[in-house]
Image 1 (spheres, one colour):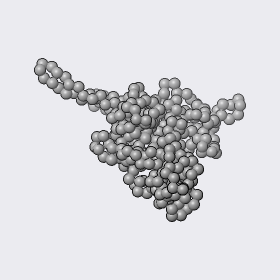
Image 2 (image 1 turned 45 degrees about the vertical axis):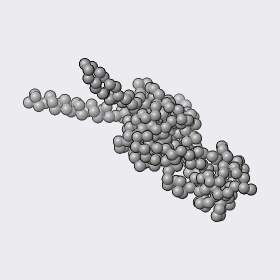
Image 3 (image 1 turned 45 degrees about the horizontal axis):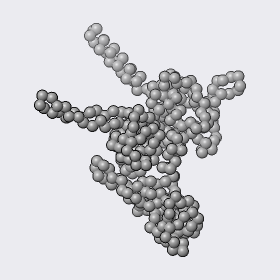
Image 4 (image 1 turned 30 degrees about the horizontal axis):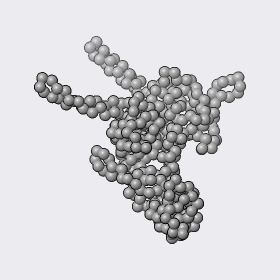
Length: 341
């Protein structure tokens, strides 16, 4: 009987230990409450309470729909930690002497909401269509003429374009540049677009007449138009993918070879691979291989990858994605792997 009981107890203890370890781990100095201030991000707030910030939705007990469209958090709200879960909730101090917290419903402007990650860093990547796939190119408008037959145009000038959807007034102007090719498979993943400016339709028709609102470079005949459908980073919270995802870092903004925290990188995976906005992926460094020679023989050893950081995916295309490096203990390099944390 004793031989049966001890293995059984050990199995139960192991199961309970595994369940406990599955719970998000609190940060060593996690506070009981935290008052949100302007400039915070969801990632910052998560890091105050958790060792793994991307597990934020679990301690809020969010379902999948709520992760994609959460109740937004605003400056002045108080985040309350229940250590028995752990669970997090929103409250606010009531009265002056009584510092107890009570739930409260808020009505705030959306533009005051706390973003997931620093918007100032990623703003150019949210407002400019930098990656254009074949479907987008097929549906893009085209500048067919300029006012008074000038070769290039700038702010305030007029251009004429075909294939302009009358349901939309504001358009991005871009010039397709180099193709983006997966270095391993040689698959064409998309075209990197050279952003030129923004224009507004002043008269619908065939062709449509547009006024250039802003131009960072000269605009001419043959340049393309894409609808001003700006993605939003505010309505997603950090979360791990539900399925296994694996890809590689194939580009670093501004063409450098390596980069670090709070810099934008390009991944060779996208929506077709199950990737979505808000996903958090772990960075793994490829250590390569070594040849060991001994007693006249040679052996090749493939060194294990080293996990060294996290990225937050903030914009997803069909076969590519942009991500922001959130945490790292070393430089991120082209060719490094990204996987489900």
